[in-house]
Image 1: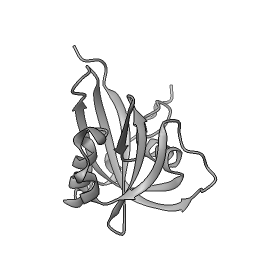
Image 2: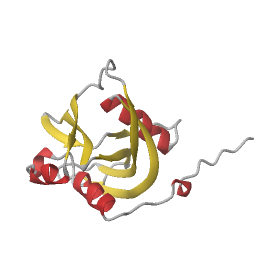
Image 3: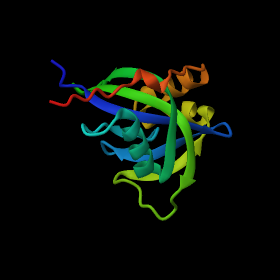
Length: 152
C-alpha cells in the first residue's frame, strides 16, 4: 500500500521563451525541476509556491494562475505526490541570497532544452507535463483555492 501522499507545489515561470528551473541534487542524481517543494501545514498553497521559489532561485514569485494539480507515483518507490502547479512572474532577484540545500543553481531553459534531457535528468514526469499544459494555455483562477478557517 502506498504511503500518505506528499503535497507539493511548483512554479512554471516563463520569460522570453525560457523557463526558470533549478538544477538540484536529489537521490544522489543531478536533476532539473521547476522551483518546487513541500507544502507546510501553516501556509496557503500560493504562499508555499512563493516561498519555495524564493528559497530555490532567489527570485520573488507572483502567482497568477493555477496550471494544474497532478498525481504522480514514483516508479521505484511507494511514494505518491500530489503537486499543485502555479504559473506567474518573477520581479525581483536577490543576488546575495543563498539557495536551499541541494540546489546547485537556478537557470533559464527552453522547452526544447528540457525535452532533450534524458528522462532520468528530469526530477519527474511532472516537469515536462507542467510546461506542456502551460503552453496549451491551461490556466485556472486562483480563486479555486480556499483556506477555510473556523473559529471555535
